[in-house]
Length: 494
Ligand SMILES: Cc1cc2nc3c(=O)[nH]c(=O)nc-3n(C[C@H](O)[C@H](O)[C@H](O)COP(=O)(O)OP(=O)(O)OC[C@H]3O[C@@H](n4cnc5c(N)ncnc54)[C@H](O)[C@@H]3O)c2cc1C
Image 1 (cartoon, helix red, strand yellow):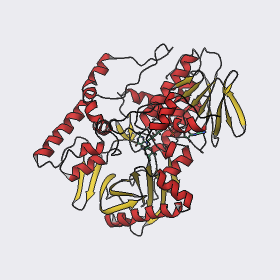
Image 2 (cartoon, helix red, strand yellow):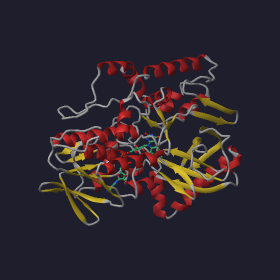
Image 3 (tube, protein in one colour):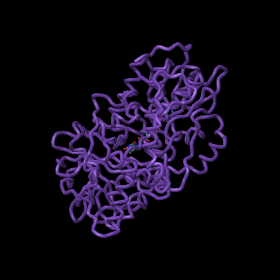
Image 4 (tube, protein in one colour):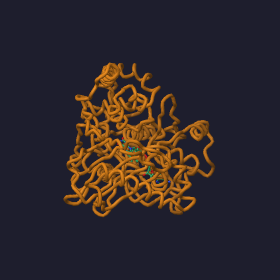
């Protein structure tokens, strides 16, 4: 790895040590920029994080990481940024999910074997699912280089690589006009429907469902040992080892022009830089990070059209051994769970019993994400003082039903935690507590430009396609390239 560069000395400030900010930071530091990351929270990772409570680890970020397969270009990015190292090998779960209902269990294996398809409708639906997955067998997110950039290790453009992805491109329009939930409804069998609805947030488009299932199938998706936190720490340590600097607990209050470039104001200090990269949620930044809210056309459209992906996170530490239960369960509830004004008939529960060090000996941790737009509900609760009581009510309702489904949990709860969209908003300043870019069927994405002006850049979830960690990393790399290009620097990948 080289940190040497022939460029004159340039200083970059990156706002945010989430996955996109750290990705940009590693590449810029390696390309010879003196890079400073300012992060409002106490550690790296942004919304991709996990935390400990009373000896139990709650995984509040990565559930699966795409880019685990060595042959996939994204894997190189995870390697180059230090996200994946020897200390966090990826575990591939199979079954991907297991349905748990009144009739017992039904696994969703990576190769789909064993799915019960009795009638003609289900046989056709299964055939078509297999066909769609076959089309996506060679699909992966291309990692490309910016045109006209000086680059030491270019990612070669291969027509063959793109040709193999043509079948996926051809069926993409069909998948983009329906939701994941709508796609699952092609099956008559309710259990298969429920299993498919577990894979991604059910209201985003079916492209995400097929793409994600496809990555599981080819062994490109898995859980890195140590989860979100180890992955983010690996990236932060890689950046520091290259000579970069991170200041935690440092909230940037303002981005402002400076006679020689740009500057940021944080903790009452004005820090000058040749370039500033905003990895904080761009939807928040356009209103909050400048003296006057940005009024560019793209910012106006974003304000008007952007829909956010929200969830409630429930974590439970249990003084019981749950190793008899599957790793990832789609549980069909015996009675609906009412939470934050919404009704849930099924819940996905992750069981971390086999994850080393996540719970004391003989104990276990389970987590659950309840998807859906509940920001307004929680905001109102905060305003009328009922926020804590309502959070408790959600957890109580969950535990009551879970106790009936998983008897070991009853009377064995050691610790609980609930995060709402307000938690994510407070913690990472994401707009309405959103945790990734939403992409419902028949809708467009509302992007911020990677290069806003020379010396001022955006990166992260609002500059890329929808999908969590991969676009965060990809956008971090693209933004680093944009900075290199503007300052006539050679981009050094590894
Ligand atoms: C519960 C949950 C489950 C998920 N599961 C998966 C999954 O299984 N697979 C997957 O691929 N993705 C998953 N995601 C999504 C993925 O984690 C995110 O999309 C991704 O991490 C976003 O990265 P980012 O860098 O764009 O944004 P962020 O993580 O929001 O990073 C922005 C950073 O900027 C900081 N910041 C904001 N404002 C300021 C300021 N003014 N000054 C200083 N710092 C500031 C924030 O604190 C934050 O650290 C999940 C997310 C959540 C919450």
